[in-house]
Image 1 (cartoon, rainbow, N blue to C red):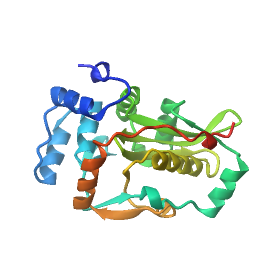
Image 2 (image 1 turned 90 degrees about the vertical axis):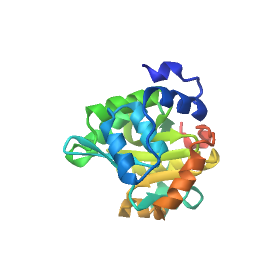
Image 3 (image 1 turned 180 degrees about the vertical axis):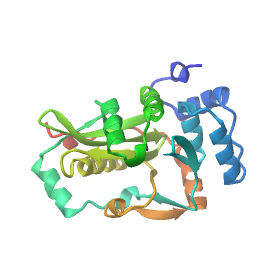
Length: 239
């Protein structure tokens, strides 16, 4: 069954929930190990990814196998407390990069796959996220310079929830510029939650912090059913 053909445009969370019930078994709302087992027993597909993320889990690829996780502490960046480092503010003001949205999603995810160590993004993941992009659920934020894609990120947006999956750059700080542009969009469209999964020094410079999984699950339940747009601020594009 092609779920994309059943979804109305623009994307509506209630419609996709209804469609998901038709194509995948419901993940039991039991212990995390039960959810993990249920997800890992399903074929890796766009529907499985949506089912997992809507239940507050995320996946990683290890030794060519998909593993699903719901760690006790989830890393996120509070949308209203996003910190822009001074050097990135100066760079943005210099307008060295043009920011675009969803113009080269496939190129972005493939560049992220090249950057990722130990093949964390394989062809199956690329194909699934291309389907999610066609469904209007996966998006990219891109930094361009002299007509060339030089940095960017991609992630999932479900209702007012966004999960950044990966980013890359071939020109210094181009990925950071795209990351700042993402937060401008999330804030201006009243998103509730930005998930970054694992904490790292790179993310901490933007204000990333930990949240207990129980609290995270409560917020994501609200976020995925709250509609949100994906309109960018025209001032972000430096034409």
